[in-house]
Amino acid sequence: MKILILLPVDSQPRFIKRINLLKDEHEVTVAYQQRDYFKKNSIPDGCKKVILGKVENKKYHKRIFKIFNYYSKIKGLNEKFDVIYAFSFDLLIISMFFKCKFRIYEIGDLRRVKLKIFDVLNKYLLSKQDQIIVTSYKFGQYLNEKYDVQPSKIKVLENKLEYKSFKDITPGLIKSSNKIKIGVIGLLRYQQILDLLDAVAQSPERFEIHIYGSGTLLNRILPFIDNKTFFYYGEFKYPNDLEAIYADIDFNFVMYDSTDLNVRLALPNKLYESIYFNVPIIVSSNTYLSEKVLEYGVGISWDINNISKLPGNLIELASTTKYQELIDSCKKLDRENIFLNEADYSIL
Image (cartoon, rainbow, N blue to C red):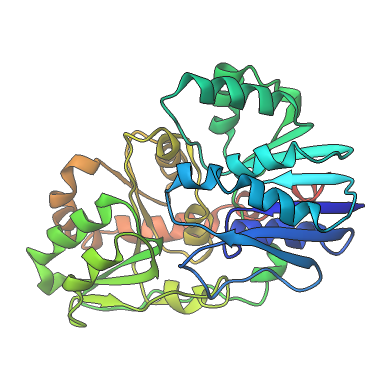
């Protein structure tokens, strides 16, 4: 089949996973927007690539005005597609201007817009999709309750790891050190990262913070960097650099703003990476992610309003057998919980 994939950015690991699932069995064309971060990751070979244009992060209103330009670029391909697979709301709108046999819309993040017209349009567009892929079971529940999307249309495809990408990557051993090393990995955009840096700055002698990635908070993070307590390594290539990154940290800090609907319902890829590399994860309480972390026994849940006390808790935790128990839980967890399986690969 001929498949058109519409991406809001070309470097997101989840998007690359989906392309890998499809490109060997189908003729895939990827039309994508460009951004100024995570340039180390790119669309894999084996598919046709079309640049739609450059967008600014979070400037959602500006993207809408670019729809007609995107339309002309896709129209200029002069091709008919069997499947159109969209990954963002603006690109979902564009997809409806083109005929196809099967429509897929994937939701990896929920965006709430305080406009009634948005809900009306979103409900209409969702009703026109043949399949809606969500990365969290809770996302599917939300779509069913708010937009009346039928469960039969929803496929849950969690942000699990691709076995073929990780089969040659060996989980490293946690290194003994008198310092507690906390990793901050990925898109740097939530206030909780700055709260962690502020908290550790009050007692830096026991900690090292290792930061990998990029994002809107970078300019506020850089003043902390001293290469003694706070280290910044820039962007990284997924999954190639993960082995070295996780081998050098004791905890993975994955605390986001739990007042945000998306954060409360999401299951990010950091959960599965942390488990695979046997690194306990620190997450925000009152989230679905927190439920899973506590169910699996692979990390701790913490209140976003109390991050100032997190360092003291980690010092206490590291001095007991509890820390090793978290690592052991990562090692013992069934691999089916962290790798994509055959059912996941059957997107179409």
